[in-house]
Image 1 (cartoon, helix red, strand yellow):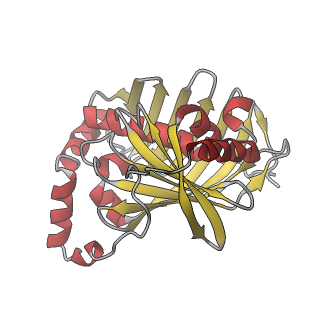
Image 2 (cartoon, helix red, strand yellow):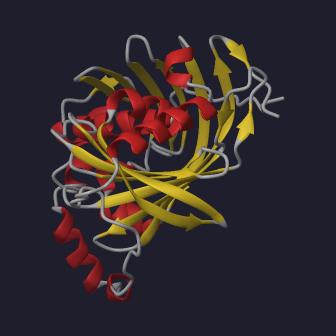
Length: 303
């Protein structure tokens, strides 16, 4: 059976108020992305910049690539996962994970390690509603996302900080893709193109490039590359741009999916997730794991 988590959201003595925390967040995230890199260089991290990504860049020209085949492969992958975005009214998931130090230094507003340790997340595909309850050493962060709307509260106090809101919107949208994968992309993505094949952990994968407009969060447009296994048709990697924040615009990252498990109803879900920054430098950012899954109100057995 899927493991259950007990998460205590009761405010504890010594936690910061939301207003105090907003001030600290603004101070921590006030520098631009490249200013943060310069800061790291002064700390002796120049060696990281010598590491270069070998992955293709999302959004580069793909003239002559096959569009019809790419769309067919994406739909086939969605079916292999169980067409979750179309199938379920409500999906609840619990995660726990850890951030790398380099990620929190480079992208403090996006990573938000003070709050984003573990989470309880609820998705309602028909309405597009997303609710995320994050917990960390600074307390509880609640995010509500539907369409272009975004609401964030920190320890019960609503945040009106634009960077906090933009980061939360980007995270809510991206984590929808991480959970629902190709069934979401088949509905929301455009300009699918098959741009080649690559190996990943011994599996040969089709690389399908595409575009999202609007993009993640408040971005007008983002680009992605989905790695679809030739053998299983499961999505093994998702590369994407981060244009929804001033501090991350021009960067791209990827998330790899593993430990795929089949629920009792036949749908297939990844349980292990690893995110890496690809550009402007190559570094591990985040690793997290699914702890429980509830589909349409029922806790599903993960086999």
